Length: 193
Image (cartoon, rainbow, N blue to C red; front, side, top):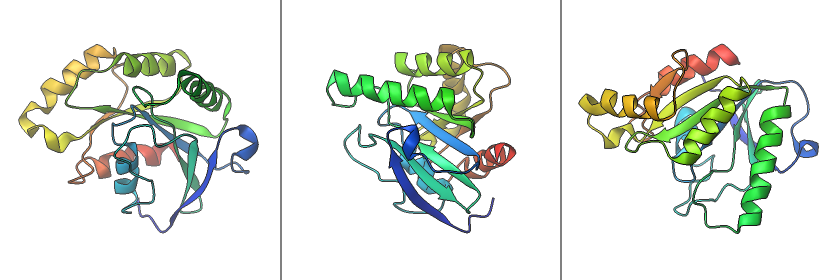
């Protein structure tokens, strides 16, 4: 896909703040340090549109990005070990759940997992939840540059078994460093937008 324009629109904490209109939306979900911002930036060929932080838990709202004036990327707060109080985590969970269940413009979720590790309990819970509600999901195995290419299939097999991946769920090995998987992921996203 050719990116003509990409810009940050709003950080929303509820439906009254979501962008108006009926453009399709692609959401990005994953652990706090899995590389969501880096993946979004790489997809858009931008260095710092989505803010990258050295400390997990930087994203605390649903960040909407306008892509080509025709659809949105939505960066969800990371799950996992963000160093925030439990009541804030509960609020994030409700905000994310409300968005995923009730946003009619949501077309798919890109769930990011770190290719170097077996899925966390949170990764498994998120994937089970998305499957339960029938939300189209794409699995992006990030940080592929940190694992030799010859070992990708071994790592992907562990991830697939760990989260009980459905055979029809697309899986993309992705590296924000090298651009590996960028075109493949765009090919999948294009089918939804």
